[in-house]
Figure 1 (cartoon, one colour):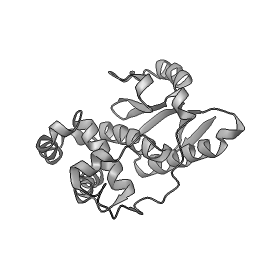
Figure 2 (cartoon, rainbow, N blue to C red):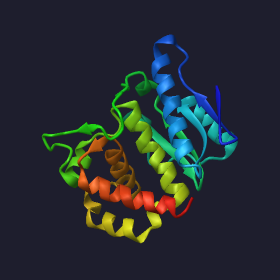
Figure 3 (cartoon, rainbow, N blue to C red):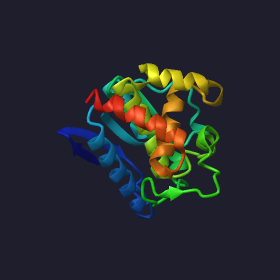
Figure 4 (cartoon, helix red, strand yellow):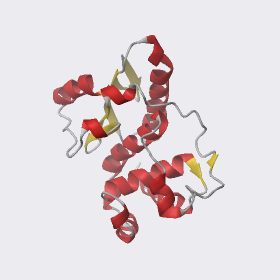
Length: 201
């Protein structure tokens, strides 16, 4: 199916079995949310691996480097403002819907509110909402060139040993801030991200 947002067509390829109907609708709802909120991102396609890979070749979106589909729930291919989000064919079947409201999840135990370690414990790929937030943040990062901002670079360099690279640092901080109430470090980075986007819309 195709989804039209901001006068642009987004190709969507998800399993058509009835048992995935609720999960598929959640994906569509999340796409609407992020595309409307971050208009610079040109999301060309989203869906499971095989079909989206064909579209990526057609649209000239480069494949993501260094990803092992067997060990990843999803990944984002991007080139400037253009992006495509891919979800593993097999793992889509097992990814759960979280169903919690954004920013409403408060971990009183401190397991996820302990700054950087809390961000690392919060596993972005376990739920469809958190997976999409993480992968969409890669597209936002590319479109708004967040990774080039000196504030972000300074913060990343303080914790570089904790993250795969600056792009993962940005995506993981964003996702934690999006869904967890109380992680002050994730919220600090989110404020920086929001300011960069606001100044570049």
